[in-house]
Image 1 (tube, chains in turn cyan, yellow):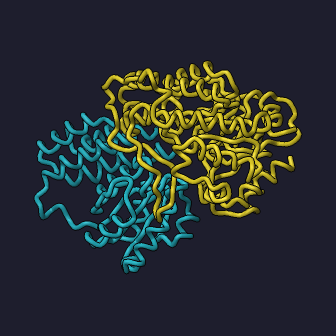
Image 2: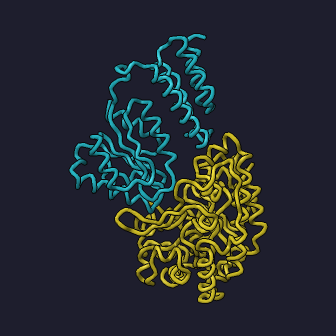
Image 3: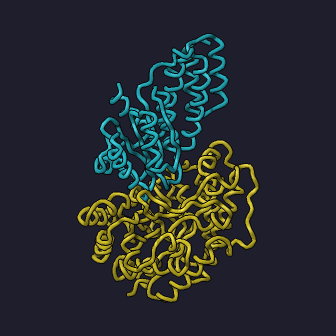
Length: 214
Length: 337
């Protein structure tokens, strides 16, 4: 199989959310001695981009996106192991991400973590149900460039406002990009609380962050 | 007409004296808590406090219904799920939620305890319903909430494994949906015995924003229909998000009223579902009611009514920090129709 075919198949398996086939394909590709970075950038990423478009158009739904994003992570991990350490490359920026304390799930954030990693960001994933103090502490500890928070409910979105204030109080806000998202939030909310930007979807977030850290 | 006559007239397709106004989900706010001196977390777990806070939607706001409970954890807690308290940033009280790790894995066998109705806080919820009923009699309808099969299944095995199973192994979900249906229906019957006039089933996880519409049709519809068949009083079905793509099947469940998030399109839904279904909804909770003021609320409510909403309501659970004035503005619009 030639390289172009590998790319085509990788993209298709991502769209189909087929974890097993992605794994097999990544190993076969490496066995041929091809460049791992190319498959991440042109195969897997192309698949997740196409799937994102289908999702935005309402043609595929969240469960498929979750499984595809896990398949993507598996594929990336296999391919990255084949890279010499010094070739892993400089990261665009360091992002601390979490879901505000009190929220029920972090499905959307999980997808964002995968996409950011694929697009060359270093992500420190704080998980779900994260206290404000932890966001601040981790931002400081990891010298983060970006702090992102997701809020799914009207009861938890106030936490994003508290986070902005806590970052200011800790003297970190000036040197940070802050981004907010999640089902309960809107562009207006993001502007009101003073976040650098609001994004609706994982894809949207990646586009906006890439503009800032180009 | 009093509130109960008004709401029942709307449900029975008779002409109410004006449009009813109430929420299908939690209507409690911090301002109401202050006024009636009934606070969370006690209001989540103590029947008497719960009843006092629930009455505030009638006594303080003048809405056309009272509603218990304020959270979605009663069945789950009684089934053994770990619950975390509703602590919010800034030491504010919110609603309790499902904690981790989940009680079960997808391949486990679910267990329904024979003394389900005496477990967790269910006895306090039933007590709250009887207190509220004694207070309002036939003046105001008492709404009691249950959780839909899909959402309850998600509380038992966790949402991510649930969603993944809809794609990979949907049949494995049937025992969980069956248990979810059984628990919700058993609770609904006890709530009716305690005095509930209307049962509202919240099924957040069955939203097309989380699962494929096809999953709703092929998996959830059967269990939801079975549930509504077993409930003897009028029913409300609430699913969050834009539900246009599943509304046709939501109508087939037998629910009398469908409670719509403002992301849904009442015109489309009316067209798909015909004249029998009652549409409740109208004003967005996260932005309009919580952050905006009277002007935006009036505009949005009027538009929703023009689009076919028959019972004016917040589109989902009211944010507890929502100002009373905003809720009263919404009621004002209903009173003009």
